[in-house]
Amino acid sequence: MKFSDILGQEGPKERLRAMIDSDRLPHALLLEGPAGVGKFALARAAVQYLHCTDRQNGEPCGKCPSCVQHATFNHIDTIYSFPVLKSAGGAVSDIFAPQWKDFLTKSPYMSFGLWQSMLGNPNGQPVIYVDESQDIIHKLSFTAHGASCKVVVMWLPEKMNIQCSNKLLKLIEDPLPGVRFIFVSNNPGEILPTIYSRLQRVEVKRLADSEVASYLAARHAIDPADAMAVAHLAEGSLLEAEKIYTDNAELTKFLEFFQSLMRLAYQRKIALLKKWSQDVAALGREQSARFCEYCQRQTRENFIANIRVPGLNYLTRAEQTFSSKFSPFINERNVEQLSQLFDKARIDILANGNAKIIFFDVAVKVILLLKK
Image (cartoon, rainbow, N blue to C red):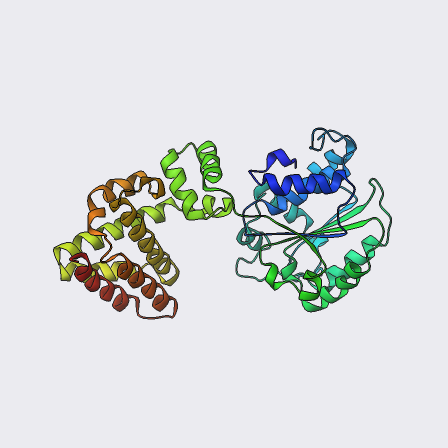
């Protein structure tokens, strides 16, 4: 993995390069930020750059023995640690090395859901157990073989149980010579505070919408306007952008439901709105809640379209077609109430409220709000 393989994140890249070039890479470093923005890819690139014997223009060469070993996840002085499920063979990362290598190839931006599936239980809760800390301590008792230092790269240190955290804390407080830890966290607030306070931290922020949109347009050859709309929904995460693009059928269904709601509410067709509420409720709790979020977004986007600020609009071509005629009905008199209505519906649905009743109530209130 080279730095140039990673989308954006020029600030963290330069900081990591500078640390390594000046031989000031801290013994315990944390890359923290939202999921899907390239943190683990940065860690991989940094370790390969550290071990490379022929660095060129701020990049690992990709050709030396160390780089070749990194490319196949077989570098002898790089220890990968990650959450696992307990198995008959134990609860250490090495047992799941084949799945891990496959995972890194399939998901360089680290989809936790995919990792759960590859462990054999999509609903399981992978943990970093105390067995893992003991295994790491054992491996670090040997000196580096092919590089100047050993590096432990741990994905999701917030998944360490308390026993594992306490064992590794001693290593972080009293580091061994020639050993570096690089932790990669999506939720740093969940890391044991005594460990977190001892880590030097590099914040990795969300990607720009333009970067995500360019990636989508190039990878999937989709319309730039559609790519930008998906990027805006993804909130800077490539993982989320890919999920939204893959689930395009869901967005199409949501747009159809939203259009039906607004058209039937404007025409005051109560009987058809009752049928509409039943159809939406049939989506199930989680998808119904996502539909409410979609309605909130459409309310906002149509209000922006109505006040004619196109630079702030993020709509797909299909949404734009509907918005061109519908947006005048979303104005300063009803936009806030509509947004609150959909948000309350989402909360009520997630609290196991009766979705048919909730959506019919929404439909009746939309009738009144559209007339404002």
